[in-house]
Image (cartoon, rainbow, N blue to C red; front, side):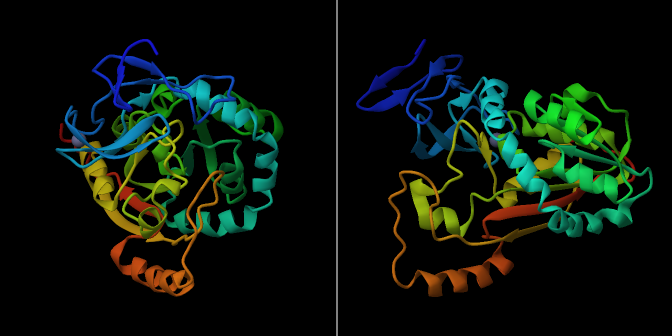
Length: 313
Ligand SMILES: [Zn+2]
């Protein structure tokens, strides 16, 4: 640890300090480096700690309610790269789930005008390869060199290694921008969504599937909730966060919905054991979550207005 003090078992830090935090990834080659940060959406420095976990903690911004890891991972690309390289076989397995993805992607057919489709966090290209099969001119970007190399060399896709901001696509180029399990990994979600707004055509659609902090599953599993992973999930969202993020990015929020309730932790070292009545409770909560947006995963659609408006500061 370069800066910071541990007093009474609690890690204290100050703005600008940098940490090497062990524990979660004791056997990793890349050591996660954490630094203090403030809210990415509204810039507020004040936050309220929600839960301490694995060398960091999740905080809620006291002004806008964004939930983020504080301290936050600084060497995002290096840590992610290590995880991706260990998963190259997993990409091939994902390709076998093509029919399910194809059903999902057909929903975007009605937005086709330019014919251009972008996936942010495209991984090894499973989704955009299916979109290509459906007639889209596809592009993808991902910070993983290993995954994007796989997409280019094994599948022949036009994939950029880096962030969407770095890719510098033309203004108004895409009909659809798709992200799946990516928003939670972003270091700067507002910057990313503003860039998406710029590169979408007027009336173009942004779709995302991400983690729901405001879920029954998080309440049931507590510290055993698998999404509490400060080296991977830098932000965790609620439906309210999503609407605010869209508004500030200049996107019109169209629709948010959630799905799923889990009652098993599915992670090494988890101590949670569901009570005998959990199957009954889970069935009830699953039904309720269709109406109150407390399911596991948030999905939402947001549209670039026909006449572009700049996001509010
Ligand atoms: Zn904020």
